[in-house]
Image (cartoon, rainbow over all chains, first blue to last red; front, side, top):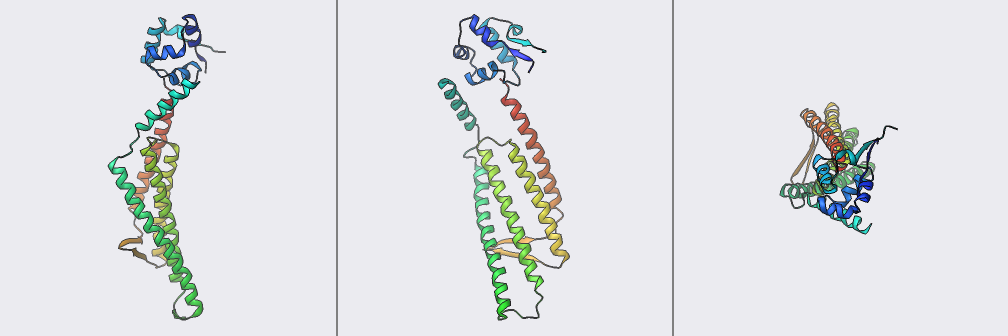
Length: 68
Length: 184
């Protein structure tokens, strides 16, 4: 899929693990893993909001578009 | 990895809990279907025994008058065999469908296929009824008071249509479920 998720980079920049994020945003680790590995088919605004709040970032930093 | 597995187990459990285990209607339907299945199996076995013993009686020329037309009872028994076999297939599929509803996995392609099969079977049984009526054979009987008959009833078309439409609904539901499972 041309839409890429930069969750790994954001987590690394903040020195946070996926488990810590899942505890903070109250989203299951399994769902976050699906998101991180690019296997997700859709993302809820509520999920986006929770992640952006926890990582103090903009949706644009989390999502990218790779046409190639 | 271990955490992930644990989470998956927890999620699966959560999904399972969303099933309908212990639902009164489903339990009642299952009990009825088990009784029906037992009756149908008894009827199927009896039909086979009847067919075999008719053949034996005819061969020994003891019980059956040689003037009786052979095709009538034989075709009646064969029609009954096909119908019973189909009915058992329908009941088994319905049971599997109920099981999947209990497990909270109702919207699956397998269920759409089951409903389509049952719909096709309804049409098939109806066609069999018309065929029996056409050749002038009545197939009617009862197993311990449970009536079984093959009649040319055009009402079956409406039921079959309903089943085919329901199958579409289930197919669409399975599609939506897959989408939802990919939503985080």
